Image (cartoon, rainbow, N blue to C red; front, side):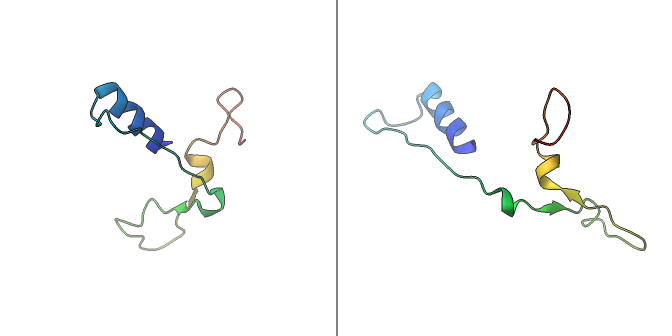
Length: 69
């Protein structure tokens, strides 16, 4: 999705050479979405650490009923 938005911005800004066409695409791999460790940078001393599922955290939640798609 990021490649498509960058190509659209380039077209709008006329930042590309007019003799070439812009081609944008990509793929997604939901099985490779990581789990986030929010306290890993500052360090986790003792006790349980919180792990956040990247699929649920990054927008795969319905906007109407707030459930996982």
